[in-house]
Structures are given as structure tokens and as C-alpha cells.
Amino acid sequence: MLKDTIIWFLISGIVICFNSISSKKNERYFKNVLKENLQIVLIIEFFVNTQTFSLAVEIILVFLFTFFAVMIAFTEINEEYKSAHKFFERVSVFGGFLILFAVVWSFILNIQDFDVIDTIKTFLLPIVLTFAILPFAYLIMIYSRYEILFVRLKIGREKSPGLIRYAKLCLIQFGMLSQSRINQLLTSYQSDLIQLDSRAEMKELMQKYRNDRC
Image (tube, rainbow, N blue to C red; front, side, top):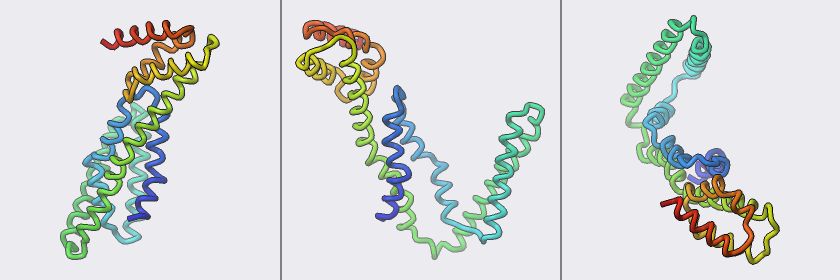
């Protein structure tokens, strides 16, 4: 399944890593990624995609569902078309159930041609890969946050290399791998770090940070 893995990494894996950096203070980003990969809708979509209709039927279905999607979006933003909006929504849902029924019926008729093991592998692969890459994406996010924090540490008063190294060590000991703690340092205490003048002052700041967390 090397080809599927490479395609997943290029389309989804890299996006997950980049979004983890740009998620800023969104501490629910990783939970949201897991939710998106474990929704029951994905199971239905995957199951439907395993069954195909003839080319003519597929073209007609794409045209119809595109038309209904456009009409639903158009009528939703215009209050005077509220009744039409409900109508198009109901027709779209009804059509979805019809397709699902047709797919289930086709699956039952052709179950002998259905490779269960390979299908399960194909379905589970992106879920397994997502779980596998999340720790790596989380570490990238933590590293990027510390880089931003250390850049801000060098702003303001001129600090000796020894003081900067000491301040970095203190910040890492306080933040560790906690996204919320690092975000707290970035949002609430950056002005303190800019005005930092000595190791004694850094110790006082760290005690203040710990007291604020209690």
C-alpha cells in the first residue's frame, strides 16, 4: 500500500503538519483532526465510493447534486426563498438515501466480488496514518512555539548569551510539552521577557508563572 501511503502523505499528512503550526492558540486542533477522521459519515462515503454506476448515470448524478447544492446555497442566503430552501434540502436528502439504498442493494447482489480484506485495509489506512503522524505534528507545533518564544526573548533590552540560555532553559522547564503553558507564555508574559534584565529576575518571573497556574 505504498502508493496509497505516499498519496495520503502528500495530500493530508503535510497539511496536518503545516496546520499544526498555523493553528496558533487553537488547542483543540488535534482533537478536531481525530473527530474528522472518525466520523460515521466517512464510513458511509467510503462504502458508497466502492460501488459505481454506469458512466451516464454518474454524469447525471453529478449534475443533479451540483445543481441542488447550488440551489441550497442560493436559497439559504435569501430569506424570501426559505420555502424553496427547505424543498431543495429535502430532495437532496431523499436523493442521498436513494443512492445509499442502490449501493447497498448492488453490494448484496455482488457480494461474491467484494474483497472484504483489501477494502478494510484501504479504509483503515488513512485513519492509522493520521494517528501515527499526530505525535510528530504535535512536536513540530511545540518546536515552532518555542522558536517564536525564543525570538521574542531577544527583543527589547540587550541580554547576555548566558542570560538568554538560562531563560530558555527556564521556559522549557516551565512549558515542557504543554501547548496551553507555551501559549500562556506567548500571550500573557511576552512583555516580561522583553524587559528581562538578570537571572534573579528570571527566577522571580518563573515563580510568578507557576503561581498563576495554581
